[in-house]
Structure formats: C-alpha cells, structure tokens
Image (cartoon, rainbow, N blue to C red; front, side, top):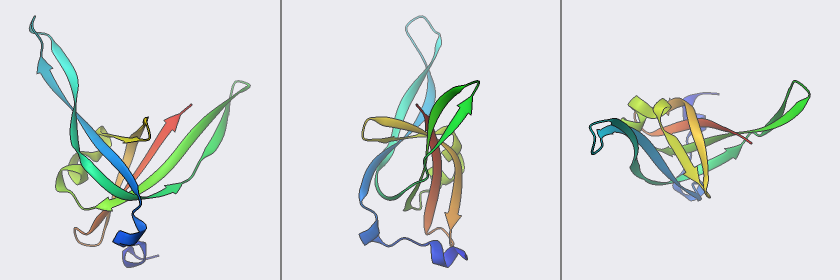
Length: 113
C-alpha cells in the first residue's frame, strides 16, 4: 500500500481528540515540574486495533489505536512524547508516520487497562 492509498479525507475524520505535550517548569520552591501543554484539538479518523496480553497468568487488556490527523510540524517532530485524550482516556503515542509530503499524520498509540 502506498502513502497515497492511506490518505483520509475530511468526511472520514469523525473523532474529536486533544493532543497534549509536556513541558518542564519551575514551581515556587524552584523544583522542576512536568506540566501538560495542549497542542490542539483535531478531528481524526480512528482505527481500533485492540488486543489482550497474558502476563504471568493475568490477562491485561491492551488497546491499540491509530488516529489520522492533518499534518502538524510540531506533532510530526515530537509526537512520541505526547498523549492523545479521547473520551477521558489517555493514549500514549509510540509512533508518528507521515502520509505524503506534509499532508497528514498517522499517530499509533496504546493504553493498558
């Protein structure tokens, strides 16, 4: 499948998400504190790739999803250090894939429950 075949058109992006990055700031006693910084709200195409994993006799549900959003240079460069908020769940982005020449991004993410 070529990158042209992966392109998602606006009518297919029906899930509203928030992408959040992190920054370090100093608090009142000069300690470094990690804080959330919203990178924006996007409409994305959601593809659910859920699964389960058996660890030492315990079944752990792992939700894997991909979200396709319009291109954003900041997310393209630092997406692996961001999370996606979707319906009060926070998914950790582990891979960012470009579609075309600065057209769209596929964000691959996961959460453990």
